[in-house]
Length: 130
Image (cartoon, rainbow, N blue to C red; front, side):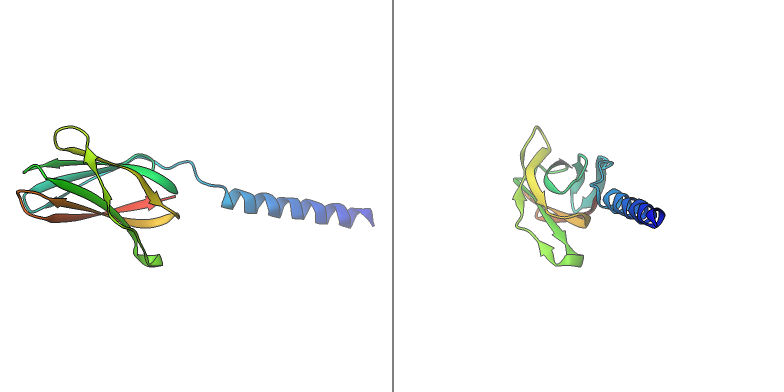
């Protein structure tokens, strides 16, 4: 009579441990760097360990020096689109956008927009947030 209660308790404990393990936030996010060309610009996009919450993105541009750089996160599958975040200068040809909010895990698209003497340009980079 006592044995079934112990067995039920052990099974319940295993189920709870399994669910907790599946739902525990992943800390294995890795830095990512991608590059693309749009018009006269070569754009390199970097994200250090993309995660839920505030992120910092680095953008390096070769070609004509852009006057303005923005990053705009979009999660098309969920219908999320956020206002463009300006990327401030961080050295010659380098820009940094700080505290870019990604409120959930999944596949995001980061649109980097440039405006400058080479004309306007946009590049879209895929970004997986775990």
